[in-house]
Every structure is written in C-alpha cells, then in structure tokens.
Amino acid sequence: MTPELDDVLAVTEDVWTALLGETAPLVPRGVPAGTPFDATGAWSAATTVSGGWPGVVTVELDETVARQLTARMLDLPADATGDGDIADAVGELVNMVGGNIKSLMPGPSVLSLPSVAAGRAAFASDVVEACRLDLLWQGAPLRVSVHVPA
Amino acid sequence: MRAMIIDDSRAMRSILRRIVSNLDFETTEAEHGQAALDLLQAGDVPDLCLVDWNMPVMDGYTFITQVRANPAWRDITLMMVTTESEQRQIVRALAAGAHEYVIKPFTPDAIVDKLALLGLLPEGHEVPA
Amino acid sequence: MTAPSAFASVSALVRKETSMVYDEGKEYLVEARLTPLATARGLGLEQYVARLAFDADERRKVVDALTINETSWFRDHSPYQAFTDVMLPSLLEQRALTRRLRIWSAACSSGQEAYSIAMLLDQHLPAGWSHEIVATDISTAMLDRVRNGRYSQVEVNRGLPATSLVRYFTRVGREWEIAERLRERVRVQHLNLAAPYVGLGTFDVIWLRNVLIYFDAATKADILRRMLPMLAPDGYLLLGSSETTLDLPPDLAAAWQREQIGRVPAYRRAPAMSLTSTGA
Image 1 (tube, chains in turn orange, yellow, purple):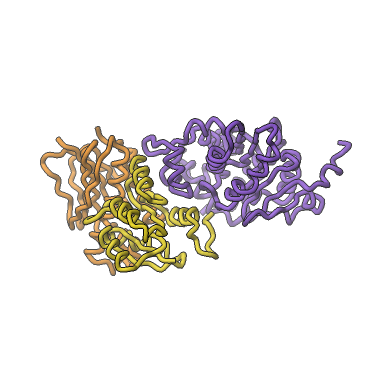
Image 2 (cartoon, one colour; image 1 turned 90 degrees about the vertical axis):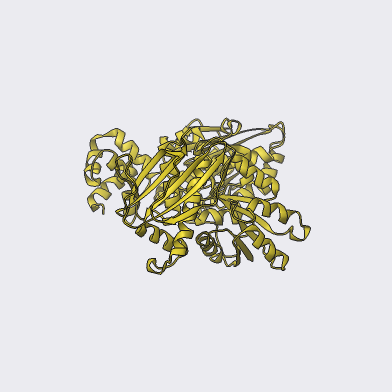
C-alpha cells in the first residue's frame, strides 16, 4: 500500500502554506525517475512510520530553501540561521509532512522522531521508492519521497 | 496569563511563542514532557500548556496523563498541538484530559480560534474573522 | 495587475448577476480568484475576462469564485453563545406546542455556519422536537460543498471544538465528513438574496452574517425590508459583527428592534410592524 501522489502534494502544500504563507507557490518539476536529488547544497530529513503501515517519509531541500524556511520559522534574517537552526526546522518540517501522510494510511502506526542530515538523503538497501514529488520553490528544488520495505 | 510551550522543535516553539505573546501571554518553554513536568514541580504552573505529541524522553500524551493525575494542576488548560491527526489519536488525547487539539500544520488563526473557544482570549483581543 | 477596464467589466458582471458590489480597491481579490480560472483555460487574465462576454459557463464560474466568503466554525463565537444561552431557551418556551424550529443560514457559503447550528441543536434540543436548517447561497459550487459536507484539515482546524470534531465527523482520506444525521437536517437551496424569497416559509432565527457588506445601500435596505416577513414575530435576526441597521431609511430602521444579548446585538421585529402591515 502506497500513498497517492495527490495526497502527498496536498499535504506538502498545506505545510508549506502554513509555514511560509501564500507568497510563492510550489511548482511541479519534471525529473526523470532514478535521478538523485541534484541541489548543489542540500539538507535532508526523514521520519519512519512503523505499525499498521511501515514506510519512510523523506524531505530533501536545496540549501537556500532550507535557510529561508528556517528563517521564517525562527523569525530571523536568512543569513543569521546556523546549521543547528536549519536542522531543527527541517526536522519539524518532515515531522509535519510525515505525520499527515501517516494519518492517510492504515493504522495504528507510530511516527519516529526526525533524523536530519546536511546533504542528500541516504536510503537503506531494504526499502524501495513508492512515491516521489519533485517541486521548485522560488526556482530552487525540493523533493518529498516515500519509501516502503522492499 | 501564562503559557508553557512544550515541543522538541525550537522552530515550532518560536512560532507558537510569537502567536501567544501577541495575545499578551507570558511564556515558558520545555523541550519534552519530562522537562515540562520538572518546571511544574518547581512551582512554575501556567494557565495553558501547548503540548506536542512526539517528543524524546517523555511524549505529550504521557505528559497529559501525568498532569491530570495531580489534582494540584487541575486548573491548567491543556491543548495538544501535533501532527498526529488520526481520529483515534484525537479521541485518546481528549480522553486522557486534553481540552483542545490543534493539528499541525496550522495557521496562527487556528490557535487564536481555539483559545477563544477555551475562554482564554484576553480582553481586547478579538476572534479572527 | 488587472487592467482597470478588465476589472470594471468583471465588477459589472458580478453586480448584474448577484447585486454584489466590488469597489475599486478589490482588484487584488478579483485577480487572486480569477487567475486560477484563466490559467485553467490557458489564457491570460485579460484575455479570459474578454471571453466572459460570450461564455455563460465561465461567467457562472466567475460568479462562484467571487462570491465565496471566508468562513470558520462558530465564527465570532459570541453569536452561537447567545443562540444557545438565550434565543434557544426562549424559543423552546414559545414553541412548546409545535415543538418545531426553523433556522435560515442565508449566504451559507461552504456550510460551516449551518452545520455549527446543527451541532448546537443536536446537543441542546430536547427529545421530541424537530428542526430544519435551510442553507441558501448564490454559488452553486458552494451549495454542492454543503451537500457533500466534507471539509479539509485546514478547515476543521479553525474554530471547531475537538470534541465536536470527533463526535460529528469521520475522517475520509484527507478530508473530514460531517455525520449523516446532521447533513439530513440541512436543506440546501439556491438563492440570490437580491431576488425574491420564494418557497422558504418563515423562520425562528435568521443568520444573515457578513454578507450585507457586499451590497450597496439600496440593495441592503431592500434585503432587510424583505427579511421582515421571513422572520416569525418573536424570532431573531443575526447580522455580522461589523453590520448594523443604523444606516437604513428611518421607517425600516424602526421596524427592526435591536436587542443586546450578551456581546451580540440581535434584531427583532418591532411590534409596530403589525399595524403598518394591516390591510395588505
């Protein structure tokens, strides 16, 4: 069982609008299947769902997107955000996206605390990509993906 | 009025702090349920707790059951603010003693609306249109 | 930005079809709501507006898009408090023989007002009583939404007590669906408030909130004049928190008696009405 792409998009847009307002929309981005997230500087965060539906929800963000999101959440100027701030904000982002995806799947399930990394996400060899959403925000890329056990 | 914001994310605490500070609440913060209980036990008892669910050390659900087990804290209004959004989770939290429940993501108006329902909007603050 | 002529023609269209007034200064709203429609047809905003003159389907969509009100559950809170604490107990006494209440949610938009009332009546109406809530709107898209009774997570997060969410709603995918037993109490009907009120009957409480602000003074007065016979002699009319009967012609202002209930002004038919309307 995998989440619908429409649902993942709607959840992501709801989170985005709540955190950033309706200033700039998320725009779909065509990326060939199998292409790793290609931002030059990237942040990634993942949360694991276990129980009725097992899966991993991952968000990868271009550094500039991560920084602006963090600045907005912490109410700081973008150039005043440190790595610790970004890790915290990006972790909360994946928590919101992951929790809402969990609620659309069969339960009951438990959501793990987020894990965050500077750089692209690394995926375990025992999961496969079930669903992937590539988007642009103000010209910079972000990706939401869902992996399920192989 | 005083609010305690309990969430493991500093960014989320910052968002919530700005919303309730605008309503003239004084705020304290804790990064998980146990830290919040420690503050309560030290005598720092607020009017309102905004409580995340998934946190390290002690989650928000356990925190709520602990607060409700102590009659000295019965005047505290408990509002869950969490990404947990299954119906059964909301039912569980209410049964454990939460007064209100806001699903993340939320807009500031959603928090203000709920505080109005709880009768916690200070004089001079209108319910948002 | 919208060209002034495009704005003027949209504004004239909405006025003709609904009597609602979009003044200059509302350009941003028109632009925000019409851009998605134009994009859906692969047109720029001005091209799209030019097309409206000969495309009735698109005209209907524009009217729908421009007449949607922002709304939340138990909006402003205090009118619902006044309804439960004062109006309802009084009506229960007055209607002890018929044991029936009729409520009108005029300009119901996506239905949060009608269903908020339905929830209160579910909780406070004694056994053996029946009630009907009539929800009317000019937008057919909104009426479909009321019929479906499904709301997004963002919508149920606004002003709806969590106890009511779990009691009256069921999660269906990303949306929350209101209980069948509340949906069957709400009758949906298409109605332009500026046109005649036909086949509605009379009501014990009329909720006419946050819609008069969209009409010009003459239409507003006309609506409030035609609301008089729609309300039971001992019924209540509720307006939005920024709306009053103060700026009406003197005879009409006198026909509506303001009664403060808690923090809410309710309007009631002045007793003199029965004198002026005899012989009709």
